[in-house]
Image (cartoon, rainbow, N blue to C red):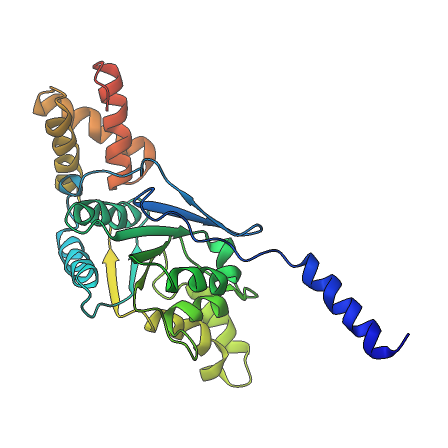
Length: 280
């Protein structure tokens, strides 16, 4: 048999082995979806795990900016990709989900699609599906960061820069991270000190965060804000407790965790609601 015939048979065999392109989901089935790779699919989320926007206290500036940016996007107006960075447990991911929840009642065509960090290499295939979607999509990645030999950041550029095609007009990207530059500071310094050209050693990775039009910082809360968060949860869910008892218990709870944050406040409130027999 000729070489051309062999090549044709090999090409046909590879074509049969290649997985079929993922089908677009029923966008009306849910307000949020999760992307899974291998095999590619968008699974609807029946009930999004989120809290009401009014319960996120102590982050008013970030809340207002992200809300306005998202509203502009939902209306088809220009809007920026956003990086929510800073202290653990201060409501970064909660804010993304809460903003979407607050707006979806007014903009039912606004959808939330979560992509896991480990699935970033498949982002090109996901964007091909989203580009054809008849809805507007917040593409969201939680706890985004990169290590020294991590190549996932190159895949992310497809979302932030879009290559030749550009980022789809109906997609905006929101990410949360504990790191402002998406990689540890000591790693940045180590690469700069050991590189032949220090200025270029980490520029590609560090500049990735520069591609986000919005940087929203989240910082540790003080004791008054911490207690106000808990009081807000109590009022919202009808848990009765006097101020002195709440203060004493909440401060003791925070001391055992070694930190104050929105997450710690919610964990204390969950314990309190359970002890008081209140479902949340």
